[in-house]
Length: 124
Image 1 (cartoon, rainbow, N blue to C red):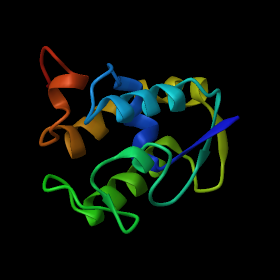
Image 2: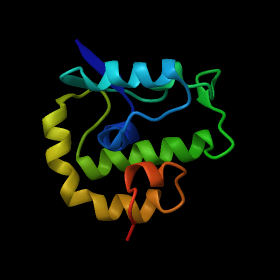
Image 3: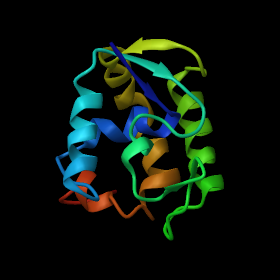
């Protein structure tokens, strides 16, 4: 089986440390990251499906606008060299992270609420 994930989750889920909005949300993420393959989708995905901020298939978080999430998705796919509809292995994704992380951090991590989870000691 494969997970269906949007662009920014291809990067951000590599930093998942068992934290989230609820026990159901956390269990869902574990089930997603245990799948070997990922199908890249546009918009709400398998992670979003259990998010309390998903309303009418869009992000309604106070911290993130749906437009900002879509921009993150687009940039993640560009940095990783992927496109919607591709099916990739988690190892391929994680192998690409070292060369893109500085740019990703600069664009998206500095004002992200999950920064303390992903980078618990420091973010430079």
